[in-house]
Length: 434
Image 1 (cartoon, helix red, strand yellow):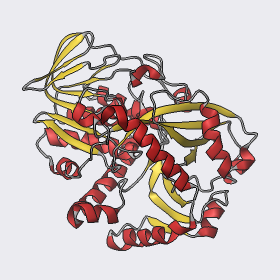
Image 2 (cartoon, rainbow, N blue to C red):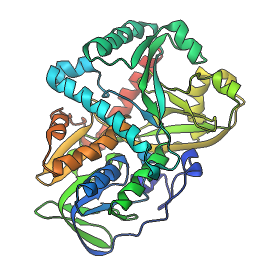
Image 3 (tube, rainbow, N blue to C red):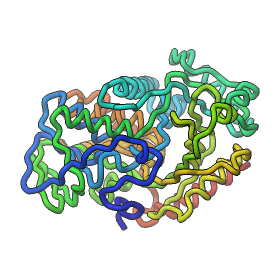
Image 4 (cartoon, rainbow, N blue to C red):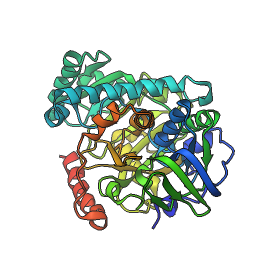
């Protein structure tokens, strides 16, 4: 079963809040015949679009192949949160990679946030606004001392003054639930409309001269100098290839597929609320992600809808009733929303790794793969495209630091990794409740 079509109609965006409120782009043509380029980018999400744009800015002749529509996948469906930091905290990265690489990885994460903020200021973004402020919320009291110590680490050892600790009373004054015992606020991190951001990147890439082809699924890749890529109706010959497929890689590269696994996540959007109703849930215009292993994450849209994400599954198919699946964690936090109408409900396929760090790999001298953002794809996925462009241009320092982080294979291979992960996630979801 193909994840590109398992839950979606070919060539159509999902029926999400984002798709209903974005300004769509006219369809790009499908690739046909023999196509020659300097760089072929596979995937029209944040990584692929960013790579294509930054490569074209450097003067490369770039072709981008997207199997569906640009921004179709996780890039156009996610929670829109733009986090500083990697998915592993700095203490763990220092232990695993050493202080120097850990510091560079931290700086790279700040570069990612800065890049997203700068890009949203461009006119091509057409209504995609960067809203500052993200809260990490601890759902267990025993997590609070560790959070407080980590905030001090970031402030003192990394000189990151945008973050501050939130005690129990303060966090409950900002978020209208008694479920949280502490956390932190990061005023540098933020949130945005991800589909508008992806469409803005596509406008930028097209304006820079990138030839974008939609409905052009890559069915084969032959490494070499040059490399050759096949679609149903075209053969693309390229000096370099960038794979930015994330959860939709399929079997295009078995090495990457063994380390980067697709999972599904789900979001609902409520009916619009009043300013008073919004303030009863989140004050200050912040977004929230909590400490559960299966994270609850939520924020408000600009028209005051609560966008709430929660729940995962590890099969190809989305659940038949996404509203019911996501309502459960939402109402556990905010029971007063039980009669609130849910106007939209949708799912998306992202990709995770065993250690939750992105997987950067040079699959051949001229084939780069960048994926596995594990929920941090808005910032890191966008920066990954810029880093890919740097590496192809001969400046591979940041790529090499990211690639030095080992990415373990999932146990059980492609046939057993999903059921094994489902068992592991069941354990973690039970742990979340203890």
